[in-house]
Image (cartoon, rainbow, N blue to C red; front, side):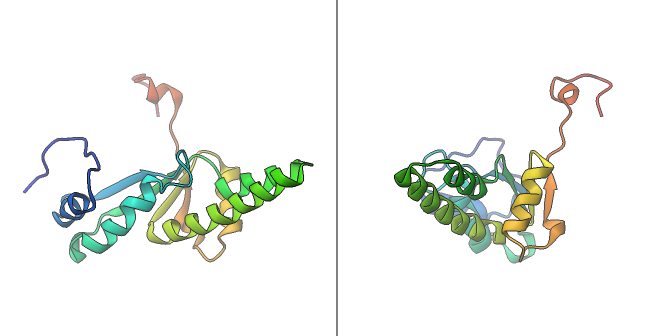
Length: 151
């Protein structure tokens, strides 16, 4: 049975469990951003449900898109500021973000970054993850705008 064509909106844990249990999805692409920190981000909400409720024989391939090396950015901000209170806040954020990233990254099959530098930096920060798990999102601007000769 094919899923209904829709953009799924998170309404409850039960709804998410039911959706995952259908086994409709071959792949899940989820972003990893801390827009509403300290609230959980989309990956932190979705990935445990995909793992817990997807049929074992039909668990989708999970890819996380990270637009930033979040915890590394926080560590760098801590290094660059002279204000002790700001420094302490950045270090706390870096530690917290690294823990949250680790949990989600372990549940993913692939981690995509926008730059090679971010991908390498995150691999260095999470060396227990296999190198082949890391990759780059490749999108040519011409392809994005629908040019017929884009690659």
